[in-house]
Every structure is written in C-alpha cells, then in structure tokens.
Image 1 (spheres, rainbow, N blue to C red):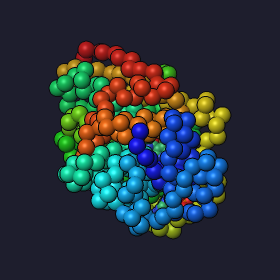
Image 2: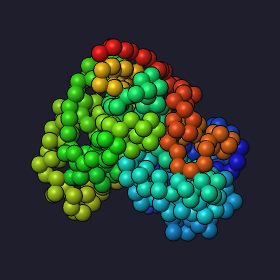
Image 3: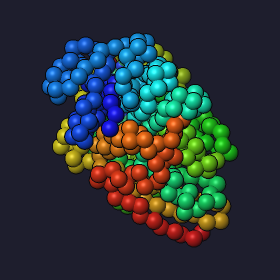
Image 4: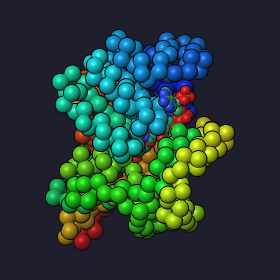
Length: 350
Ligand SMILES: NC(=O)c1ccc[n+]([C@@H]2O[C@H](COP(=O)([O-])OP(=O)(O)OC[C@H]3O[C@@H](n4cnc5c(N)ncnc54)[C@H](OP(=O)(O)O)[C@@H]3O)[C@@H](O)[C@H]2O)c1
C-alpha cells in the first residue's frame, strides 16, 4: 500500500473519507488550505498534516503515491491537483460528479498515461454505482443504443453537494445524445420508475454518468433520472422560468451563504438509516433490459467506494490514464463495497 494524501480532508465528506482510510489501515497525510482545521484533525487522528493552497500543489506531492481529492466544487479544485499529479507522477482520484470536470480531465488522458498515473474522478456515489450498473447493462445488451440510469436516495446530502448544485442553478440539464453532450431545460423529462421500492416519479438531472457512462460503455444516448417528489419537480419548473436570475452571482452567493450557516450534513444516525436504490435500463430499440442495485446512504457509499478505488489504484490494479470506475475495475467493483446488494436483473423482452 503506497502513501496517500487526502486533500480537503476536514470537509464534511473528507472527514468521513479520512476515518474510512484509517479503518482500512491507511495512514494518510491529511491536507487542505486551512491550517487550523487540518492540524486539529491530524492531531485527533494521529496522522501527518500538510497545509497548502491549490496553486502550491506542484511542490507538495512529490513524496506521495496517490491523492484523493475531497475538496469541492471540483470545477475549482480538480485541475490544479491533476496538473500537479501529472507533473509529479502521482495517481489522482476524486469524488466529483461534475460533468464538466470529467470531460476536462479526460483531456489529460495522454499526459497521464505518459506519466504512468491513473486519473480516476467520480469515485463516490456519483458515479460508482451507476457506472457499474451501466457497464453491467451494456454487458447484458452489447448492442444497446440507449441507457437510462436513475437513483432514489434517502437521508440527505452534505453542504458541499448543495453548494455544487447551486453553481449549476439556472444552467438547465445535460443529456448525451448520439455521443454528444446536449444542454436541455432543467427537469427536461419526467418518468415513473420502480427503483426497487415501488414506483416513484423521477426527473432528469445533469448527473456525472452523462459523461462517464458513455466513456465506460460507448452507448451513445444517456439520460439520468433522480426520484423527485412534487416539491422538487416544482423547483425544476421554477428553475426553467427563473433561469437567468438564478445564474446571478448575488443569488448564488446568497444561497451558498445560507448553506454555510444552516447545513451541516446528515449525522451518523441518518447515514446509518439511509439507503439508495439505483436503477438502470438499456435498450437496443427492440429489446430492453433492466437491473437494480441497493446501496448504503450515498455519503457512506462515497467514503467506502472512494477508498476501495484508492486501494486498488495503489495496489497497481488500475490502468494508467483517464479512467471511469467501472472502466478501470469492471462492473463488479460496486459489489465489493460493503453494504451494496445487487445486481438484480429483470428482462421485459420488449
Ligand atoms: N460523488 C459523490 O457522490 C459525492 C458525495 C459527497 C460529496 N461530494 C462532493 O464533495 C465535495 C465536498 O462536499 P462536502 O459536503 O464534504 O463539502 P464541505 O463540507 O463544504 O467541504 C468542502 C471541502 O473542500 C475544501 N475546498 C473547497 N474549495 C476549495 C479551494 N478552492 N481550495 C482548497 N480547498 C477547498 C474546503 O476547505 P475550506 O473550508 O478551506 O474552504 C473543505 O475542506 C462537494 O463538491 C460534493 O458535491 C460528492
């Protein structure tokens, strides 16, 4: 097992990832830009600390084998860390779900391959279970031309996820059509889906798989749904109407301010009680196959999946260059994450 550095280790998710790393026998270097927060956490866990801003990353990674980036929004943090990793021959993983980040990091595929490093963004709930389900469905229906993926998650989200969502406000949705990313209105389509606990209304969301499922499977049409009650569906309708106003710095700044002061993320009890049901459907126009998974709370899954991917990368089990989780380790990766049940296959033979 090589040396691991966790950047953004003192955020809500970073703290859970750091604990999971210790539980797995790692002795990670804890890192971030806030000296007080990093050192307090490192003292508490009896781990080494390293304080640096992103623009100093190139000088701070030479002695580590892998970076696991938990500092989001990743549209800000991923690129400087990836550049530093490519320069220093350090593997890079993160827990982003941001479509633009996946697409941008993919452009460093050749440089990463040449440097002998793996770039593996999306090692959390977004996108490990859905990416593995996409790969599983594509194996069941190798000539699939369309993938619809979705999730029904219970138990709340962390502050960073809300802040990342606020960044996208007013920008609508994204789907993949004929191999290309296409902007669509917010809440573009609704559908009733049985994610695994009865039928629920769901709405399209710009989830990371719109990028990654295509790179993993080659299926050219990808749409992702999220189970959504009436309130959320109305919210998407309002987003369509208020689009330009929501993009303003004042609105986004105000909402982020509110999140900073009011959202601390689900506590341990909520995480223990929460689950997510993940559903996917592949079609070739004449036949449709459906499979499902059940996972622990998305944040618990994120910590466990991120460390599972990191362990495998450090063990030398991942190809170099840009990788998706299932592209690197196969669809069964998710089944090795504690608490995941699946795949449950159904075939309507349509
Ligand atoms: N893949 C998934 O399913 C999944 C699951 C959970 C979370 N996430 C993502 O993970 C990210 C973190 O979420 P969270 O709830 O843990 O958020 P959080 O509690 O707000 O923590 C964010 C962390 O990122 C650091 N950070 C942010 N901007 C930075 C910058 N420019 N330079 C250096 N450090 C920076 C923060 O440090 P400071 O306090 O110094 O700003 C903090 O340590 C979000 O983007 C979220 O969407 C993804």
